[in-house]
Structure formats: structure tokens, C-alpha cells
Length: 88
Image 1: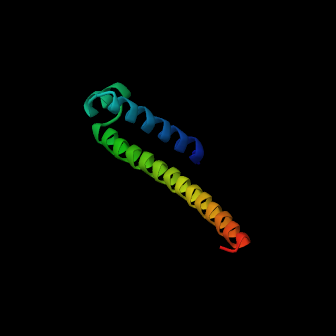
Image 2: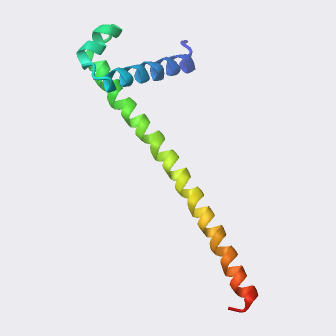
Image 3: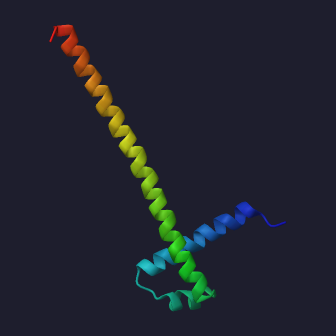
């Protein structure tokens, strides 16, 4: 049975390479010829790579927003506690 983790890593690296080549302006056909894979596979990998990049961005953005919300809530609590201690 093939090593799925190794294959998964290999696929992610291929997608990253294809995405980099695509961003640099290479055509799908040119990428396919250079890597020795089908144009259809290149197209699918480009779409999947963009989806993975977008997902990664979304997760990072979500974590950042959670951190900001936590900081705002903590600051609001400090101010509320201060006002209460001053009798305001």
C-alpha cells in the first residue's frame, strides 16, 4: 500500500509549483508540457491550489478576528470595571 502521507505531500508540492508557474504567467499547456502531466490535471491542480490558498487565508483571517474581538472585550471589561470603581 502506498504511503498516503508521502503522496499527499508530493501532491501539495506539485500544486504549489503549478500555482507559482501559473502566477508567473505560464500557460496551462506550457506547465503541463514542462511537468509531463496532462493539461486537465494542471487545470484541476490550479483550481485546488487556489481553493487551498483561500481556505488558508480564511482560517488565518478568522483567527485574527477572534484575537481582535478578544482584545476589544478585555479592554471593554477594564473600562467597565474602572467606571464602576469610580462610581460612574
